[in-house]
Image (tube, rainbow, N blue to C red; front, top):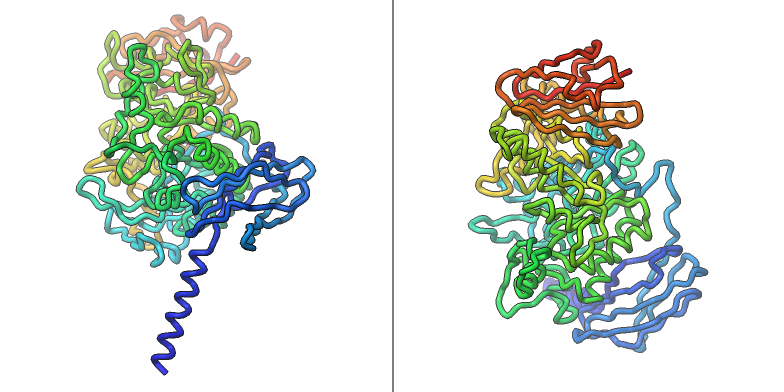
Length: 621
């Protein structure tokens, strides 16, 4: 009896193995009627050679091309969807009789709350790493059928179990805090084993090792949990920004394990990493070979670099972003490693997304060393060899200048003067107000540590962030003074939000769990963020700045009759400022309200600003 049972189990295993080998996967997994992207390219993939002859018989669907690359496990079937095509399903029919069903869906009806809204300068983006934020469903912490099956909060390099359900449970907290938009690190499946990064064995808890572009990682809750989160956020008036990675995939992605064609990836005779020098794009004396390494070099060995100049690879990525935007109703994209991508591809995908979703926001992560380099990667006013068609970038030069203002002594080109000088170069951008501005993120030392854990500098930094031009972004836990340097690595700045797990000894989502200094920071953050949320002038007003004097920086935001005056004192002593120096901006007003204290008075001839102080005043007639 035991022998029969053992044989039967083995027989079932062979059947399942054969079925797995015969299964044909398709990407995109489905599509919609009524899309402007009517020239659909479906990638078919199996663990066997596919018959090149494939037909479709469905009203309104025309097969325009079938291409089989050198790897016969793949077919690329180009379909043209006529405007008359109706929702329904059809079969891809192969000559050997194999059939694969494919669905064309009706586009989602607009809900009571809009989708694909985009983020604007009236938003405040809150960056979350879901695995480190809150564990709403402990049942999905780990799975034995994944290459990394561990979840261990005692190991800073392992997964910790945070998920999308946990984020959903904190939406009311975030809305009350003054946040309007959530940006999460990538949510797609990362079915990778732990990988060696230096001396550390790391999990892909951060989400950047993508292995399936059409499945949300089940440790985060899967596609349904993501859809539920987006719907719940929209119901509460919050927006969702998704993190995209065009440049590379995880080394266990199916297109790497079973390469469709040799030039699907940027290939080198030996491993070649990028030189990371964005100056090569604008340098009139640059080496063409070095520019090729910049774009085609790999980020790290376990992240194969996609050849986005390959039209099939490019189409795969473009269609996935359109699919995700429609499938989940997200409001915008932050694009990781933007400056490493093929430039023509970048314009193509940006135009494709905006053609389908005109209100969508896309901003690129271009970690650059100068304002001209930053402006190069977005719409700009420069005479440069290539013109990028994206509305904004993550503004690293402004980030650096804000730290100069907070930490360096005042000088002719130092300290707060560096911030003034950086903003004075905004003429290079077509619209600098579309840039995403920030003090820190998941790849940087935490803001509170960077200002020496000084609560006065903390308030100055947040004051600058929420009153200067651009779309402000904060990193989770900033409001409760989460801190650390990237020592020994990024995991040190990606610690769990205290209170996000049921057994946490302290809960900093609750004000009762905050100490005095954290409570002070939280109250300041919340008041400033909520004031900004209700202030049209801070959201959309023009910016006028005055040359800093003796470490004192004064600037104004103005919209119609509304005006906000901001004052930053970088000195360790109080400073008095003469108001007539700023009569160009104050002349039409006769009263002034201290926004943070709610105290008003007639416009004085002088104001006193405390040491290391940020003051914000509303001017009234």
